[in-house]
Image 1 (cartoon, helix red, strand yellow):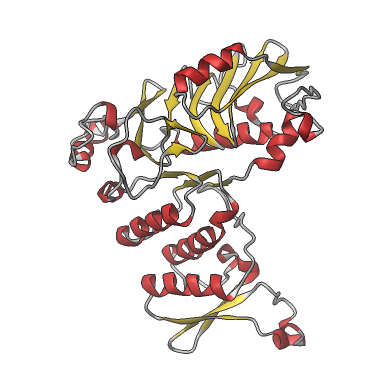
Image 2 (cartoon, helix red, strand yellow; image 1 turned 45 degrees about the vertical axis):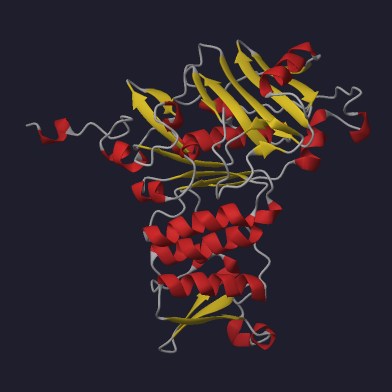
Length: 388
């Protein structure tokens, strides 16, 4: 799925919120790669999205709403109804996106006692731009499903049974189409467990070892658990996917079930644990040729390492649309297009989006200076902190 536009109203703290991920004009080639839709090259989109802003500006919540919408498209349980801000008012969330050879518009509405899904789609056309495709969307028939919502405290999943000419080849409803084609990965700072279950291999451990030695030069190697150890009565708790991080002084730390959060030894820093998880993501990224949303996943790393890992993320999978949230202003030093950055602000409780490419010249390389001078009003108001 490639997200082109999203509108959110009365969900969480988003009211009349809209964010656009399309590009008016590309400024030559960049390290981000091709930012054109393959089947419709006149539609240009933001492949890398670095989202910045102050605390409580909705960066994490925004990712969770995207995740909820994608789960609904797959027919999975969703808690989005619990996130309605004012339950006395209507709520809606709408996404415009590309999947395969089609442009989709998916609308979710909760009004009064009804939970409604509406889906429109049109085939992508090589010679048409996005505005032309939107006109085709308006001409297409709508797939609409609705169901009673008996209580806003309960989740209600609606699966359409509508079959038309487009979905005949799928032999089922439209949600099966997305089940067969969707691939995405979301990871939030609040996660306590590793949601990638990596297939431990020599290649993965080699990549992990390379990254860990950069962050901690006291590490000597990473070693897989020998098969003989699994049968040892003294090692009942050791599993096949466990491995050791071995230090130069001979000490070692067991990483259980490939999850660094399970490490009981305090030897590893938070930055080292983040590096292990990022190595998993890098090696598994080809399994997620769609939305990749990483929320504050490199908060404890040195800037130089985190910036280079972002570049490796871009390089690892050219088909993913990557979202990264961060407070680290040094990410502005990356040699990526200005449109790759988005700022969230919050004024009087309302979240707004700032696109720097619409405020600055695209050739202006002083974006970091503008941010540090609070040109985009992303810094918190701290005057009251010093008042008696």
